[in-house]
Structure formats: structure tokens, C-alpha cells
Amino acid sequence: MPAEPLVCQLAEYQQIEVELTNIEARQLQAVAGNRLTLSPSPHGFLIRASSHVGSIAVPGVVVHVLPKVPVENVLHLMTWSTERITFSQSETGQATKSLTAAVAAWYARMLERTLVLGVDRAYLEEVDRVVALRGRIDWPAQTKAVGLPTPVACRYDEWSIDTRANRIAAAAALVLLRNPAVPSHSVFTLRRLLKLLGGAGPLRPDDLSGHNDVLTRLNEHYRSTLQLARIILRAGGPSHGAGHAAVSAFMVNMNDVFEDFVFVSLKHRLRGTWGVDKRTIPLDVAQHVPTEPDLLFTGQSGTNVLVADSKYKLISDGRGRNADYYQLLAYCTSLGLPRGVLIYCDAADAQRPPRAIEVRQSGTVLETFQVSLSGSIDDIAREFDRLSRHLRFGK
Image (cartoon, rainbow, N blue to C red; front, top):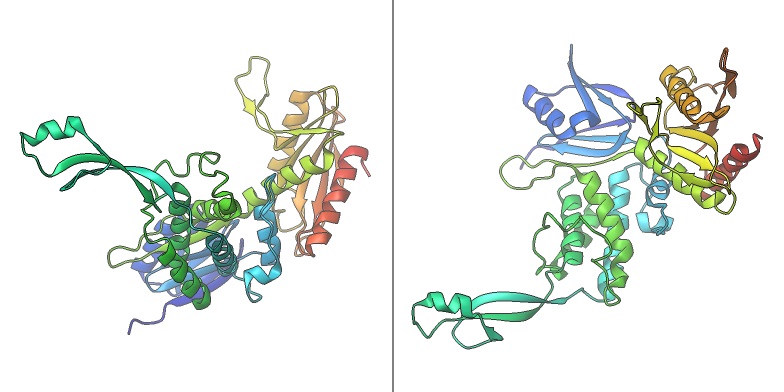
């Protein structure tokens, strides 16, 4: 019986000391990349989390990085888009702090509902040499048979399960199955569902390159499952089951999740009044230095009216980082705007920053606004209603 792995838990941006061997530490750092930082300590190694939450596993060690906000709220933020994936609390299984476990339970239920409606199939052209004629003769290949009558080189259409939709769905299930943070009930369900996709081949390099060409009216019921599968595959990182050392990862960057959610949420709320865009703005006249604000608001005439940047984390004493203010000031200066807004996630363990500061000489006003993600889904919606009013009216 293999020994039980060491299980470590820490919150995002937290640091803990763990007794690890040098080999375990090297493997963990190699899999984690910049998502975790390991450094030697008197009693082992210090593991410091970043803005990435989820789990990473190497032989002998499993590290869970827990989000500071409820897991169901992280899922809500992850899935908000113009083609929103909806979910209910029951779909994530029992209450858990593990994002990986919640996503696995959710994906298992979505995939099961999808396959019940029908497994995707399509006619795919096959090339083979067969004893009896099938389909049509592949004459260029047959001429290479130097006069032998059989086997015959043929091209024929096969009613196959090896479609792009099935390969993506199966690949996401395999990523989750390789992660020891996935609970046993989800493992059982995913393994059972993978048997229904047994004819699907491995993921191909171009399978994730497009969205629209995957779905037709015959497999439209795959849409939400494939959206979640793509999220899982993006967050999966390196995942290898062959050989003697199996490693896996499922890590989501909360900085990106928060930034995307703020953009799409405000675009939804302000449509018809302000436009919300992301585009490169040159800082200098000669356009040598590009800047990319997270949020650029335009009026009905297309004139720039406000610029904002979304930042997930405050520093420990509740102030915005100096660099955040410098960055926002650069945006305001290059756009000729008198006001800019820094949008932060409200941190319960940090003081509130000043609501506004006025820049000397220029008079530019740099505001901060915090939104809370710790309440219910309805509470989050009210927070963003409040944010949209503040952006437009300064209240």
C-alpha cells in the first residue's frame, strides 16, 4: 500500500511551513511554476500562495489553496459571460472549501446530463486497406500495391464517436481524474461517463483553437459542458499520468477571474448608456509606449468619459499599491480625463483605502471603490449595481 500523501491547506497569499524532501519540493515547484513559491526554511520549506486557487499534486504531497471568498461565488465569477453557464448549489455537491472538488462535482453532473441527451457522433472519413471493397477505392494508394488485388485501399465514411466535442469533454474529465483532490463520488461518476466516450481519441492540438465549429444543431446540448470543459483544461496546467511520477494541477488565477467578471458585469449593466471597452492607448505622442486599461468607458457619441482598472488585492494596511495609482494616473493623463477609478475586491482582513486622492499640480482625482464578493449571489449583483451607479454619477 502506498503511503498517504501529505495534505497541505493554505489560503491565497498565505504562507505555511511544511516538511518536504528536496525531491518533493523540486517537483512541486516545477508543476506549480509561478503559482506557488517555495523557499527553504529551518524545518523544511515555506510554501507561499499567490492569487491562484485550487490544488496541485505531486507524489507524496497535495497542496490545496483555498479562496478567501465562498467557493460557489468563485464559480459564479468564473462562469459569468455573454453565454453564461448557470449552476445551482446542488450541482457542486456537498459544501466544500475545495474549488477543485466543487468544479469536479459540477462538471460530472453537467456531463451526465449532456450524454443522456445523446452522445455526439459524426461521419468521419477513414482510409484503410480491406479485403472486401468498402466505400470507394483510393486509387493513388491502390497503385502502390504493385498489382496485388487484395487488400483494397479504400476510403469510406465511419459513423464515429471521435468528434472534437467528445475529445474536449473527455480530456477535461481526465484532467480532473488525475487530481487527488477530486472526491471519490465524483471520480466514480466521471469514470462511468468516460466509458460512454470510449471511442473518443486524445485531445488534438487544434481542438481548442475555435468555438463555433464545434457545435451544430445536433450537438447544441454540449454547449455549457464544453464551456466548462475549456475552463478546466485552461486551469489544468501540466497533467501527466504515464510513468512512475503522476502530477496534476487545477489552479485558477483570481486576478484574471475578478478582472473578467468586472468587465463583463459592467458591460451588461451600462449598455445603452455607456460603452465599455478594452483597447491599447499610447502614452506618448510618438506612440512608443502603449498602455492597456482594463476598462475604458465611452459616451453615446464615442467620447472617452472615464477610465478604470480592476485590482483583486489590496496591500495589508488597506491602501492601494502605489504602482496602481501611478498606472491609473498614466491612463488619465494620456486620455485627458480628470477622473479615474481603481476597483478592488473588498478584503475583510484589510482596512479600507481612501475613497479619493487628488494629484498635486494636475488636480486629477483617483478614486478607489471596493466590491464585496463574500455575500450571496444576489448580494454580489447589488454590489455591482452600486458600482455602476458610482461610476456614472460619482455617488
